[in-house]
Length: 203
Ligand code: VGL
Ligand code: ZN
Image (cartoon, rainbow, N blue to C red; front, side):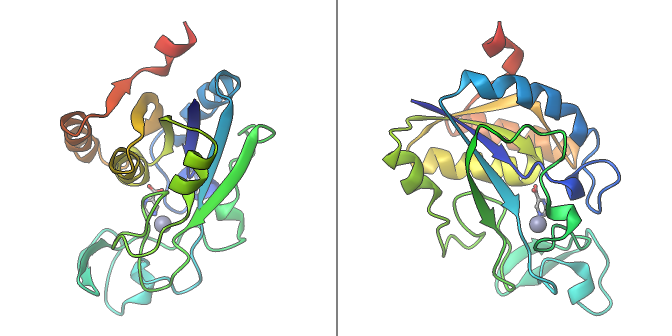
């Protein structure tokens, strides 16, 4: 059983958003076309409280994209984004949502970031997604969404670690950093993920 996992296709990650991913909007028509190919479609939302410690604005004298140590974990500081229930946290209006069966929210603890759909960055708290997928009989997880080099990458790593066959849809994602995504793709391949263009699935 195959599931499509749609990562953080939210206004703040689209051009014009507060943490815009270049061409982030370009994936939406493709993702919409892909959804009917899957029996199960699940989405995530980055869902931060105000004052989240991943925000540069929460640290005096710090600027977005600086790296700090945050409670023992390396943390990139981001512009404020995806604050709970704000317009930037909404799923992109162009994304079709009628087949999305569940939405998992992450990044809700103020003191720790959560790139992966499965766990926070310290692997302390599970979102429950792995058990949910197992309970639905899922064996293969296809990953798409934003951003390729952060939340898509870490979600795919955790999907692999949870024992799912993991397929990353390379044309249905866009990266914040091209170099970061190149390194992430090499790592994913080395760990046993499959990277494919979704156009091959639609053919
Ligand atoms: C993401 C940075 C911060 C993502 C979320 O969805 O890739 N990146 N929060
Ligand atoms: Zn975030």
